[in-house]
Amino acid sequence: MSVLKFTKAVATGNDFVIIDNRKSSVKDLPALARSVCDRKRSIGSDGLLVIEKSRNCDFRMRIFNSDGSQAQMCGNGSRCIALYAVKAKIAATDMTIETIAGALKARIDGDMIKVMLTEPKDIRWNLCLMIHKCPYKLTFVNTGVPHVIHFVDDLDKVDVKNLGSHLRNHGEFAPEGTNADFVQLDGKNSIKVRTYERGVEDETLACGTGSVASALISAEREGMTSPITVKTRSGEKLKVYFSKINGNFKDVYLEGSAKLVYEGVINNV
Image 1 (spheres, rainbow, N blue to C red):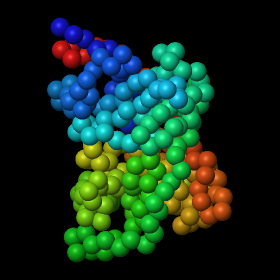
Image 2: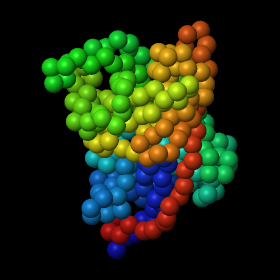
Image 3: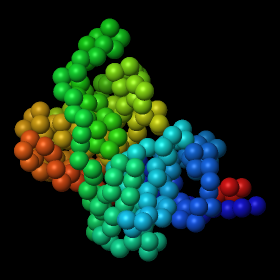
Image 4: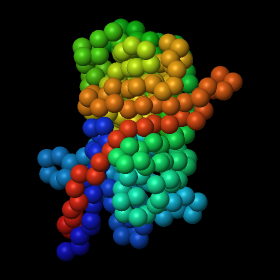
């Protein structure tokens, strides 16, 4: 029987299984993700985070959704894996992380983790899509992964799973699809966000890249300034920092707490 050590981590309600695969002991990572993320038959999590060797950064992070698909980036996952890397002495409190979306910078201060994300791209304003024969005004942005933003008056009344699923699979975003974020303004420099995540195929308690996407679009649309507080479905808060230079968003950071919940072993890997 072969066993694999893992750590369970949580950031703002997003939970992950983390493994150290620098020795490449696990070959079929999509299959492992589908297995360990199953909340009925295994550990249960929103995704699997994998540490691998990197030539140019402290380590490489690979992210697998619960359906086994690989994500380019994950904001909350980045904060979890940064905390793990410090605790496991893989990296110092200031580190760089290689991802498919590009290199990230992270800094640990106690249980608070601040991650510099890739600059947003492919912003598309004033999209109007028909869902259930109703027009929805949307904004698209890529903050490492694709997100579509929809502003609402009452976030509690939104059927996130149903509407989010239709937006996620809309032909406008084919073939990869998109994540869907629903945003309610909550005062000066503060918003509330609920997110339907592609790969999880359901609403999650928080989404780091979705929080960043929602904050940046809110800044442009509503004239909000850095930092913007994001209140997530979990009840916890994130902060999004940014600069605006020549009309473009620069120096984008996501900050919030994370914790390592427990360690264990997976049998029969």
